[in-house]
Length: 269
Ligand SMILES: CC(C)=CCC/C(C)=C/CC/C(C)=C/COP(=O)(O)O
Image (cartoon, rainbow, N blue to C red; front, side):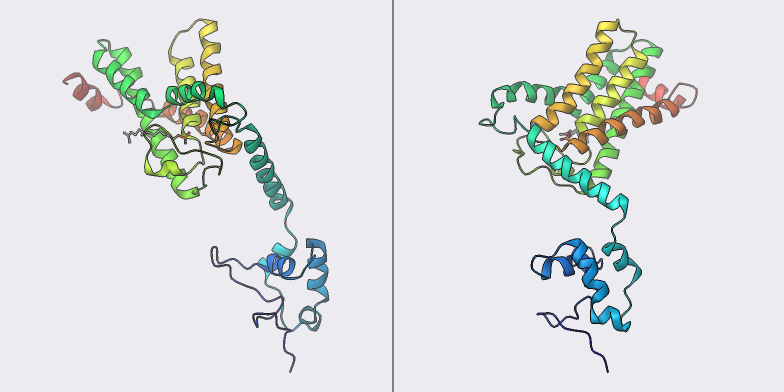
């Protein structure tokens, strides 16, 4: 009877191993990390040359074969992730007081506060309480809805993805929620993109102010990476999400026609 060759732990070499964290088969890591000096190409060769494979008594499961021949998408994603980590570390020049650009850290923290959820929520509520026109109230009510939607979606995605903040980040942020220990996506970037799109669409501004609005959003995003709070992909996805959130708000635009109760209740406050 043929018996597969056994490794140090008495496990059949080339046999699928369930990873403790994900439960996925890890052929590639088994072949490349257990054998000294191995590389993925050799690992592929060894797999096809191994007695187990040759005798055909232990067919490789489909998923394992996919691991041995990583798809183009897999390689592209892993490369993107490596570039992301490398670039984010390079750009994190204000992560500490003693970092290369540590002296501009206070300015970056000012940008951080300018994109924080609390000033926006309190500011919108204050303006709503002072607004005496229906048109103004409608815009502010939708801004409030947009800010709450943003908090909800970001918390949901952060809780699902659970990507840790970069190791060089110093966790000294002004008022955070529990999910804010995670970094994907950047809540500041989503808010900056959402609010700036909102402002550009609902406030009639002179061109220089419109440019300043976009510049502010960009700087808020950049400051997240420079402070070491986020990786570049957290911010890029944050901008995209914030942009899309505005489209949702615009699509579901609340007005006295489709949400009369909301407006009546607010006007009775
Ligand atoms: C109504 C309510 C739940 C308000 C909470 C406002 C609040 C504490 C928002 C957190 C804002 C924040 C620190 C987001 C994190 O931004 P990242 O860019 O670091 O993801």
